[in-house]
Length: 424
Image 1 (cartoon, one colour):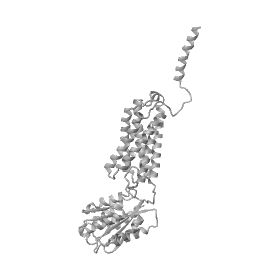
Image 2 (image 1 turned 45 degrees about the vertical axis):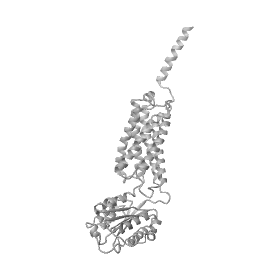
Image 3 (image 1 turned 180 degrees about the vertical axis):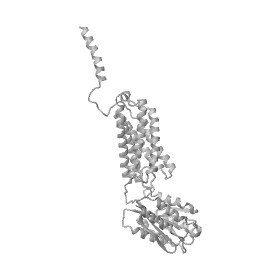
Image 4 (image 1 turned 90 degrees about the vertical axis):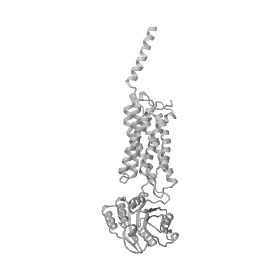
């Protein structure tokens, strides 16, 4: 039993982790909105386990410093056969922890219903002469998930329901909502924000399913009198956030009201001076509803939840432990399984902290954070044999001796018997 480090194994583990990261990022970019996140996260960590496992295995084949030459001579074929078990173990733990991470506790409901409330008063002829707000809303509808419902309201002095709450589960409904938005036109009249929010709440209440969360996107370029404390209380009680967009507002009282509406209801305010940016702003608001996964930023009601922070960190600890134990199984060595397993727990804890406090919602920086987490998993597991001593200790047992062992024993005993007979 010795503390030792195979630097070649560390190097190959890092290479394998980097390759796995590239494959995993392709999976996230291609399937994040199409595959169930429980399955996708499980596959992601299975790929990581495969990359690191193959890297470690190749390194020990070249230089069997940790597992010994006898493993390479007698058990290498078994190690290749055991490699798929590491993938299954990583996939299983990743999928289960993702399932737990997605559970909603404390009355939290996933936001699936979006009500867009769009100002079409006469002043919009100056702030949005090309009606970019309608095309931005239509583009968002075309990109929404199939399990979303959307409603569209317009307002000036009065409020109109352009499209009631409609499921986007099929293309026919999606096209229907899209057409309703593109048929909208700027009208005359004032800006009745209070009435618009009241009607938006009525639309939300029309849905009898209590398990669905709702959100409002309110766009305006004006101001109206409103008792925010009283009129927004129902939104606060129901946990319905109102995200507000101020478009080219010159009167400072307008942004002040929209900021107050967002603050009171838990939404965010977006100040837009160029109507051409509305598409990006609509998409940014929608992205904050994103599905909660271990690999991406939390952007829903649990964004600042310490509970979900702890769940993510502990989940990565379990995934790292599973990865380390899987490597020990591949090498058919109980001492390596112990060392890699403890190292995997330590690396998983650190990787969880990196993901929890590093993910920001920006595509490029989040990819770098995930790369760092994967490399930390590979590196700490690879060097932890310098902390926990290892030696040869098979997990499997063979019931009979090999011919080589019998021959060696016989050749050792026979000369002793011959020498004894000569002595007589």
